[in-house]
Image (cartoon, rainbow over all chains, first blue to last red; front, side, top):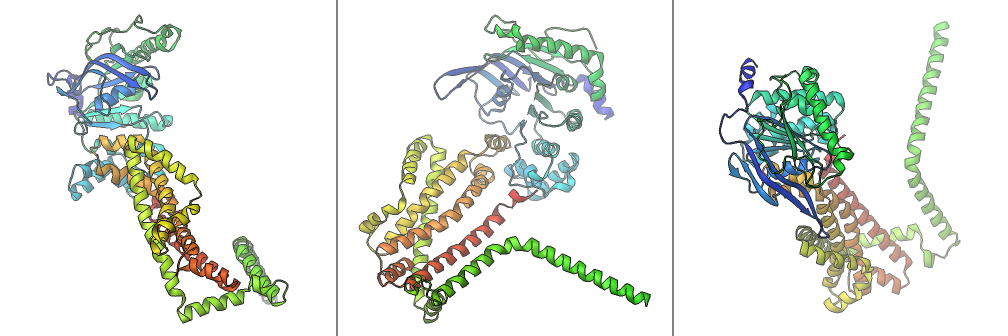
Length: 304
Length: 277
């Protein structure tokens, strides 16, 4: 943990010149069956350096989830380009990306063991190695005694932990999380967030977390991206969190810098969800078309 | 003296306790036994009514007469060629109807073109009381087993089509996305997601289709054939033999019941995850 603490300040600051994720002018329009077109997100530029933890916040229906699906290759952008480690995204990026969905999305007809093992099984890992790695991950998420249980026999928090083990067992470099803790009760949620912060501190992982919880975003992430409300969502602001790592999440939430930033983010968000945002259209204060790099905040609030 | 009294009190208490538990057991078991008891009572009443000529045994037969027919059919072995003919037709109808229904259901769920063509066609077929097609099959395929297999096939096919078609379409897209994000595609998706999801639907329809397969075979035989349980029914009707007819009805009933128990046992094993709580 000491080494991780020493490394922490340098993380995310150009270990390699190629960013882990790069979005350039990304636009996604959805075609409804009746032929009408819904412009979900428009002209989004975003850079996520390797080793950084980015949270994306925004009003409901702002295309946050769409953004993640585009990065994962589960959907293709209507215009623009997405690069992973400099390589354009074509098709599902299962080699490099772990995707934690909002719903548990565990296979109800498979045991906990088989659910966690699935990614390795698909990769053709030997049975022996699968057993070792599954046991390691089940122990890590505190579910060693539940290998033979079915998902329906577990609580919501336990299922979420299975999903986390299932996602991380293939050791993805980039982890995309779509409101992973929304359905959990407050205590379980705090435990999961603490685990996540610890996991992030352990390896050279890059995380993009979509959430509607500003406290969560600030406590966990290095950078918070605020999106405008849909349709035609854009990036409204990118804020550097500037809290040190490793973090004690409880303390981090109460740090003056966190409180200040959360308040500020609320104001930004309120402009979107309140009446001010209802004006909509291209006139609203968004960072139109400007290239934005995470880690180089557009606006700086006084230091931590 | 005192100890003896005490012992008497104890045994009395134990007796009343065991009596109480016996009563409790009876009270708990009775509702489950009740249908069986009513059935036995009705059979006995039927036998008495027939023996006392409250009802005409020529038209209504009696449990003992039916039993005699069944016993004679099996001891002389005359029933077997009919039984096997019907089982043969029902089995082929079930197997081919299942395979074809599952294949078309799967294709319809995979391809939008097949789906938009097949779905309304199957809805239309489903709306026809399928038994009325039976004479058509006999005209086309003759009075041999083929026309019965065809009718049986037709009954099963439509049900299985809808089970597989809706089963695949109701699959949670998040599960598909999940498995794809873990690197799964094609065969893995079928094995891990679509297969198990559809299996639950298929089993639910299997119990129905086993009965349907039999109905198809028996109705086909009833209309025109030279063997089979349906042929025996027709023969009994033409010869005004109520005992033979009812013996056949009971035989068919028992076969379908046995098959249902077998299917249910299979279903319990295949979908154990559903009951894990």
